Image 1 (cartoon, rainbow, N blue to C red):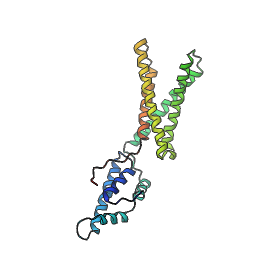
Image 2 (cartoon, one colour):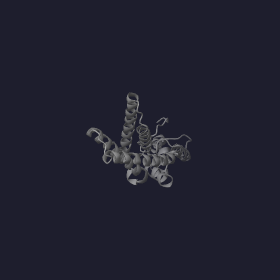
Image 3 (cartoon, rainbow, N blue to C red):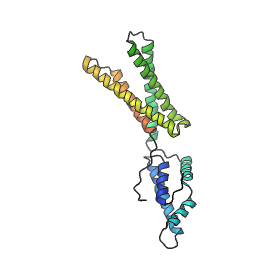
Image 4 (cartoon, one colour):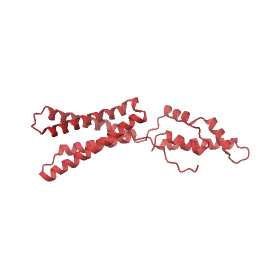
Length: 216
């Protein structure tokens, strides 16, 4: 990673290393900018900041990697509402796992005389929901998902769960309209899957660089 040549560039790179969408992350970048500008002014001999003054202030302050690692070690910069989403996701995963386990039990052991394609569909749905719940749990509790690629896998699985939940809801509504038999369990399961997928996708969202309005 090349070292930034100006304070603006330094702050942009630091913002890209901090979690996007956090109030505290934006505050950190603002405080770092103020500190660097004050340091550069103190180094300036003529009263006008030069690029050399900014580069010296940056050199004395430390690299972007060092500062980002320091803040991450001292106080992880998670969005203020993330703990609430995490607790909600635990409840959603627990409920959806029970839903999927019940679906698999009644499909495979319930003795229903369903068509083979329907049995396979329900079995695949149950297995997928349990697998996505496992990925969501790993996201909550395992340090192995700190990297970009594992988080991307969880994010894509969460988007797939939203699609599955939406399709289940549409299918349930279609059956209700056509046959008059409204399946409340399928509707509730659809809502549950969409909520779980949305919560998981939000927690595993790619850490995109924060937008900057500063001029270069």
